[in-house]
Length: 164
Image (cartoon, rainbow, N blue to C red; front, side, top):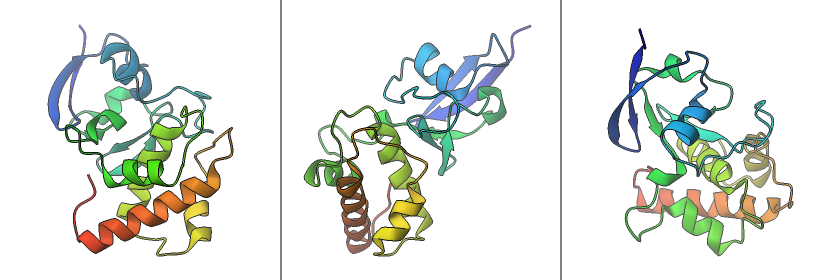
């Protein structure tokens, strides 16, 4: 018997058969659901490239079993833009050159959204760097990433809107 789990992925309810209960959320997203924006970097939870939001919280999807998230809401990088309208964090990353090669960018953006929702950084660049420290960038675009997160936080606060 193959168990099935129900997930809401990028605002769409999905029922997925789990052939192997050991499949990680990352592998389910990439291999089974073809949502390849979430990257497999270290596959050990050390680089943050696989960061997604599960029930609004930042999660290293390479470290968590998909089956343990039955009923969860999962937001990936593919679920951010609304048509041609980019999410405020995506716009800020572009405006502040918060990427170079781009491999880490989806995880960086998802982590930034999570930390903005947590509202624990204020306008303090050091707090942003500390809260983003689980996301590594081999190209060292950290200055642009920090500026992008601060700008996106200011924009969201000014708009008094929801961050997706």
